[in-house]
Amino acid sequence: MKRGDKEFCEFAQSFQPNSRLRLHNTDLNSAKSLAHPNGKFFYLRNRRGTILVENVIFIVLNLLFLAILLLFIYRQGNGAVVLEQSYAKNIALLIDSSRPVMEMKLNMEDAFNLAEKNGIKPEDIVKINGNIITVKLSNSGGYQYSFFTNYDVTAYPDVSPNKNYIIKINGYK
Amino acid sequence: MKNKIFDFFPKNSRGDKILSIYWFAILLIVAGGIFAMVYVFYGAPYDVRQIEARELTNQIANCISYTGKINTNLISGGVPSLSSQNFLEQCHLIFNSSEWSDEQFYTEVYIYKLDNPDNPVLDIKKGNNNWLAGCSIQENQTQENLPFCLTKSFYSVDNTDNPYIIKILSVVRKSEKNVKM
Image (tube, rainbow over all chains, first blue to last red; front, side, top):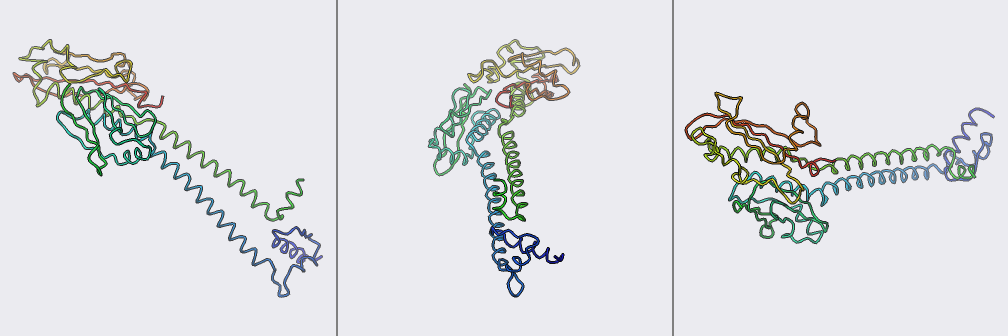
């Protein structure tokens, strides 16, 4: 068998990805039977289609994987636990740096949206009891943080549709 | 059995299958890495003790000397007052909280005359002094698990225009809520 015939057999085999027909390097006739009279292989066109579909599925799966990762990161960053902590500390620091009779308006759009989704009323988001602030955005207990100034503070949501919270320093205790 | 499985895939596509296993492994490693990074980043609480210590220092400084004159309840006519006993009440500060079993703050105020900077005219120490030991340890390098310490000083005059230098040390612990323990 010539060297060219052997290569031809291998080449024919490579165009039979889904066939159970096994070609041997010496099976020149079988290899030739796969070939079209004009010298082209019957499966050439189908093979191209298979490559395209495989690549598309591969790319789609990769994009899906990437999207799931990004969604996971976004949900972690906007989760109730992170926002509760962030707002509680933010409000505590605002109160600590204020003086009577200040009135502060804090934009809490993210908190309002998340609380609404979790069935928490806007007036229940921020509670100030003594010198402890509690921010609650989910049905869990919420997050507490204390401030060191001995102020009489009240907190209430701004009139709808404004998604702000008003923190009012009424005076010293 | 092994041959049957491999016969199902043509000989030349075995490499693709092996490659896809490696690709799957790479995806798992990348996903695991990102999950770990996100867990470490969002698992650690926001550390606001530095800002809190600065605000405490500012509140104390405003209480001692609001418009550049030392509070007459502390020093009047060059003579220190004894009313520094209720310093926290005068400054409208409260170091106790039901959130913590013990006080999480400590503060020291030293008021020196300019001509005698070694002996303070008045010193005030309030809060939980257990946290003071952490400040000397952190003189060279800050350690997150220990309380945060901040020292500031400024000049002021009393009601008879005697000049003073005032040093304030503020210590904030609250480690459990600001550092991943």
